[in-house]
Image (cartoon, rainbow, N blue to C red; front, side, top):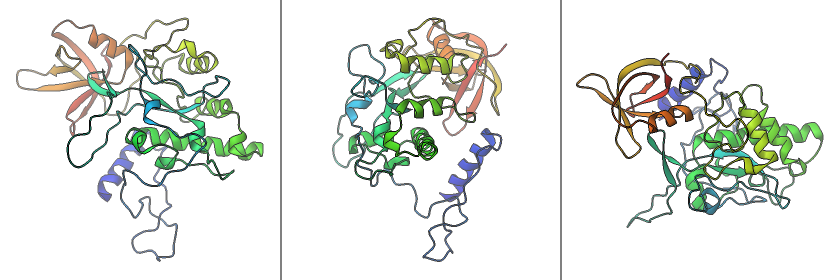
Length: 322
């Protein structure tokens, strides 16, 4: 397990061109038992699915993670009593729980997107990071304020990374302004995340506006100003709503060009045939390529650019070649 974790950390270093580095913060196995810190990037205990959580000013429940009406593809934005959006992080993992005995059916939480099953996007309000009892205490990681049922979706690492970034940004702002975290305007935290020079982070879920879209930040801010610009289907409803072309995603490490025949399965899935004896499941995280794939009516020969995940196995494609 340690080797796997270190390999994942090395992959993050590689993908970030060295910007992300393993922390040196945990005691090692041969450290003095009284040491609380040390040179290791690995915690002594392995991952736990669920542990103690903060009792926050807000508690995220399962109902807040789900679309609430027909035709809706995202959960409702969290708001304060004045109607201002209070989201500081976005997740989209489909809630899952594993109990002994018979299956415990849960409400539908998934949708078909980009050739795979994906959870429906939801937001985490700033109040879920703030202690209800201790003025200067915030929680990040999986310890923020959620119910047991909601934890089945909020525990996943992509969201937890965003929660940590939001908590860190809020802590820095609170120190700089000399106020308690709960006294910060949520908009200040949101703008700090959106304008972060190293890792700008979304605060509202826009299905059709990826991070590299030229209007990404403007659209995020516009939805904070006027939530009606975010449609119930998760799409941008403001001006200039034309989608980007399916060949505009930026290059990424280890990508390759793959030439073959894309075939839709009629149920939202796709595969790429590479000759007569090799076929790979095909997925994408790019909205424009998602649209291109869903417009296919039958087998189509093309060249796609993407990265092969041999552990999947699947091919994650980002754009059309050329």
